[in-house]
Length: 95
Picture 1 (cartoon, rainbow, N blue to C red):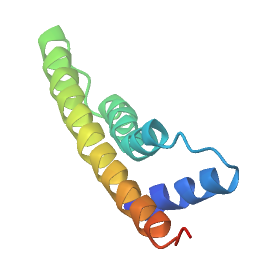
Picture 2: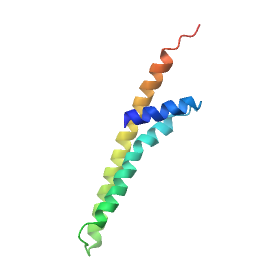
Picture 3: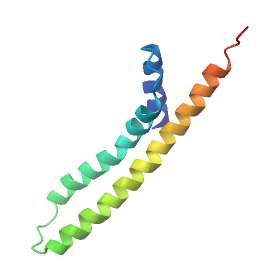
Picture 4: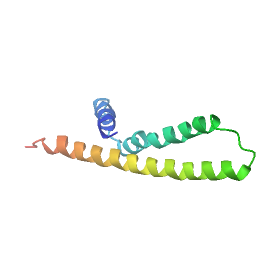
């Protein structure tokens, strides 16, 4: 996740877009969206249940897991991009 986010950040810097903070967080956090979409596809392949509570519990817990994944991977992407930005701009010597 961190490597891909740093690559996206590098392309943003090449396009001279220096508003990278939310882009880094959201592009890395999109893994949580993938987890939620995968859980919907996987739930459709299970044996059908006639109880609504079963579906509510499943999607409730999957939403929590997906949101936690979004926060963890988003934070990882942001912190890695912050480190990358400070590293490349810290090596510039201003005279």
